[in-house]
Amino acid sequence: MLFVSAPYAVNAARIGFEAVDPRLEKVARTLGMGPWRVLAEITLPLAWRSIMTGLTLTYARAISEFAAVAILAYYPMTAPVKIYELFLQSGLDEASGMALLLLVVSLALFILFRHIARRGADFASVGR
Image (cartoon, rainbow, N blue to C red; front, side, top):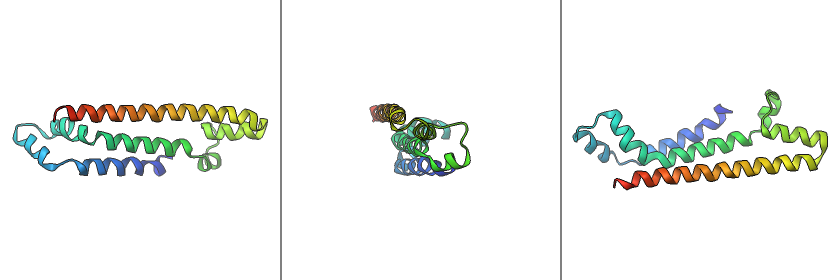
């Protein structure tokens, strides 16, 4: 799943890093910051929102993966495979409860990720 989902995170982070104005990094370097400090204090805070977007997309892709897991690695069970097994064993009533639980947990995590991304972006803009 990592092989399929990782490009979402990499592409989003790449777009975020490309959006950072190189002049800001050069100014920080001329003011005496080292390359690692520029990365930590200038580049990462400005690209934070894109990085979080990529991680959210990666999570969404990974949680929705069903076919590859069901065919290649049935055990240990992921949530979608468990829902499918409940559907086969007990019918729609049992599976719908588990699917609703997965939906609520995923929605809560997406809201948490969005809150973290917004909070990080707000923190990055305080110094400007």
